[in-house]
Figure 1 (cartoon, rainbow, N blue to C red):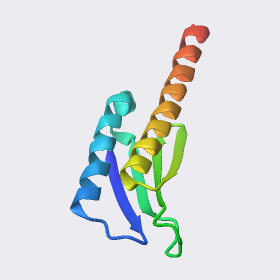
Figure 2: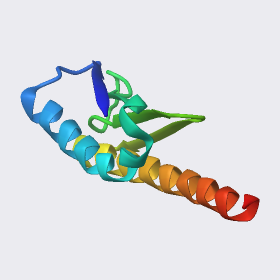
Figure 3: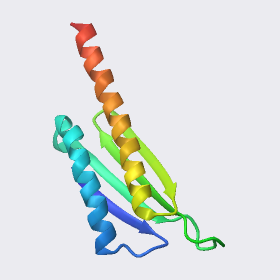
Length: 109
C-alpha cells in the first residue's frame, strides 16, 4: 500500500512517522487481496493550539480500495493511542467490506 503522511499543528518527527508506518504495514495484511491499487493517507495533528488542559491529538486514516473509500478518525490525549484507534476503525471497515464482497460472490454463483 502506498502511504502519504501529513501533520497538522505539530512537527512530523521520525518517531511519529515510524509509528504510522508500523500501523499501516499491519493493515497491509488485510488489504493485500486488493492488490497494488490500494492507497492510504494518514493525517495526524493537534485539534487546536488553544486547549487549556493540554493537547488533544487527532488521527485520520483514509484508505482507498477498489470500489470503496474508508475513512476513520480518532481523538485522544495521546497521539499514539489516536493513531491506533483510527487504524482499528479503518481495519474494521475494510473487513466489513471484504465480508460484503465475499457474500455477494457466494450468493451470485
